Length: 186
Length: 193
Image (cartoon, rainbow over all chains, first blue to last red; front, top):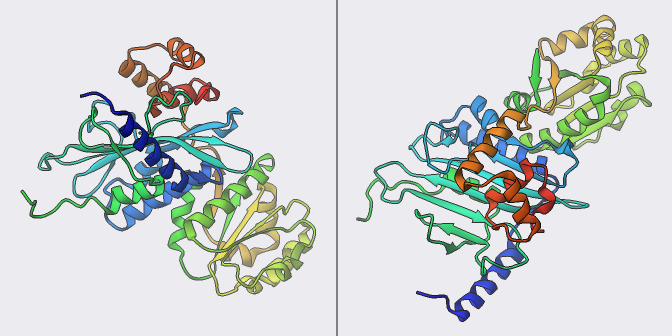
């Protein structure tokens, strides 16, 4: 299976629409950090999240803004390429667990989210093992072929064009969406 | 009691109603930073209108500056308050009860001592809600950054130098993990380079 130029062109158009409508701008990295902290705390108060408030504070961090750099990162849990559950992560009461990392660039008046990974993993009983929402970094070589926003549907090698969801929206999805059905369809 | 901003926020949030006041102690050099940080964070956490008032010039007359739609007050810059100013605040403390959530005073250690001596009733009102602010606890520590870098090196099988060289040559993958790598190396400027 090769790539088709028309398909790549379509992907570029999809990406262009996505980038235009995505809400990736925030006043500052610290503002988004505190918004995410609030959402996670709300999730705990709503008895969705099992992770304690103390652990939420321990796992949600950002890089030091005093380092005279325009780029910063917000991390929620460890980098966990092997999907090991003993590494720091956020866990829902139904056994789903997730972590994330976001890259931001501060401009004159605001900060822009320029990249992220949000990955949620499901309990053993669910046929899909994970979902990952990625926003790849801006790349002037366009090596993503219009797939800067994409989802990995339970497989690191497959990518699907993703809707232009903001970090706040994806975190809400991870907390309040993706409900494990009591009676799976098959 | 020492407390970080992120520890303080859920505490304030549970004081949903009522005229509850806290005192936050900060070092003089951190005052402006702490006020900005607290105002922005409380506004997000409480989802309400915050008013931050520098009380150094109007002094007790700051009460006249309180906007009617303010839900939560941040009062700061008490360094030039005299004993009399504190006594006046003590006398007029009921004027601070706007039927909203209350607020906080952001003070230096010396101002707290003056408050305790010359505004005893206000101090009693605050009770145990006096906190020494710890700023910067939300930042990744050096150890945490190094641990994440080690994970990235193991995942990619590449060294820091290789990543920087690839980025400088416009050959680095656009996957977000590489952005983190560059930021942790202090080379975030190479992202999208």
